[in-house]
Amino acid sequence: MFIEEVIVVEGKDDTTAIKRAVRADTIETNGSAISAETIRRIQHAQNKRGVIVFTDPDYPGRRIRAIIEDQVQGVKHAFLSKEKTIAKNGKGLGIEHAADEDIRSALQNVYTPRNPLNQTEEISLHILMKSKLIGHPDSKMRRDRLGELLQIGYTNGKQLQKRLSMFQIEIEQFEKALAQLDQEDLT
Image (cartoon, rainbow, N blue to C red; front, side, top):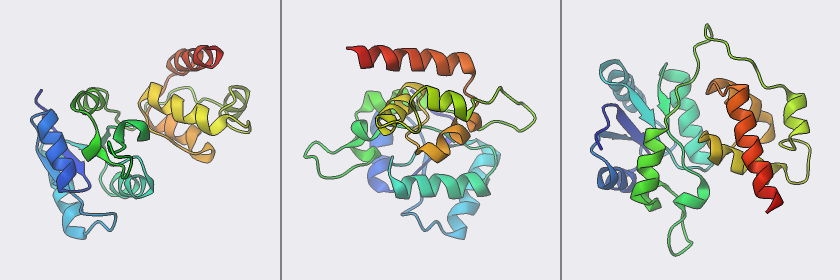
């Protein structure tokens, strides 16, 4: 599998995992303090080939993703759940620990944040509460699984509506994932 876009990862071990799973070029941020030079390289890559941000599903990874999203317009995003990035020994979390097939799947299901001119129907807070995604004892677990099903990553209750909107999740797509989530709860 060949990836045209340049993939932004956190470090060398992530690059090794990406190159093991697919043919692609990477840019490493080397931590969550992204230098101005790294941002310039990412902007250049975005202008030439496009960029996919593929960071770890933890706070530093979300921070890197937010910085890049803020400074480089139009980047795409790939996500993996925490469960798919835990080291075999249970000590450590990151893209470098993911299975090749999980990396390929995430890269086949990238999301591009929406253009403000392309409005989709917003999923209301009322719907999120009714769906037990916020304000319910099981909300965190349900949001985590919903993020996996929609491949948009985990988000807290305050950010869920923004993430659904940012990745243009249509109400039908949301309802389908929610139905699957509810069916899993019954088993």
